[in-house]
Length: 67
Image 1 (cartoon, rainbow, N blue to C red):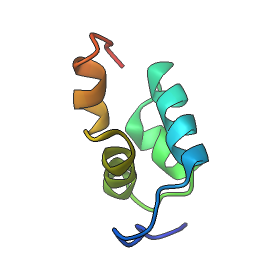
Image 2 (cartoon, one colour; image 1 turned 90 degrees about the vertical axis):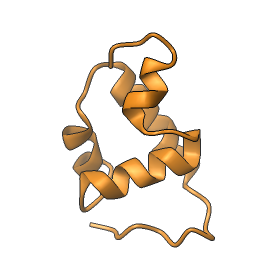
Image 3 (cartoon, rainbow, N blue to C red; image 1 turned 60 degrees about the horizontal axis):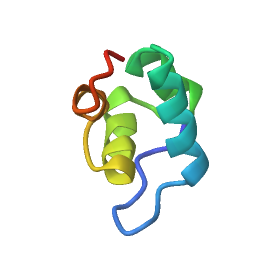
Image 4 (tube, rainbow, N blue to C red; image 1 turned 90 degrees about the horizontal axis):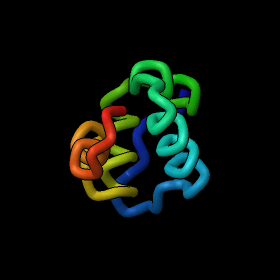
């Protein structure tokens, strides 16, 4: 499992895109995080926040999606 990337590195686009697709299908953060190689859900949420500007819950809530 990979650790959280330093804040001065870019988030791999494929991770962010896959994360968005899987969460939009209704998969839980606890399932998506290890599937994409993150050691903890909080590491995954940090990546998501860097890529999309918000946590997964807030990102989808602001778009009216119950993911």
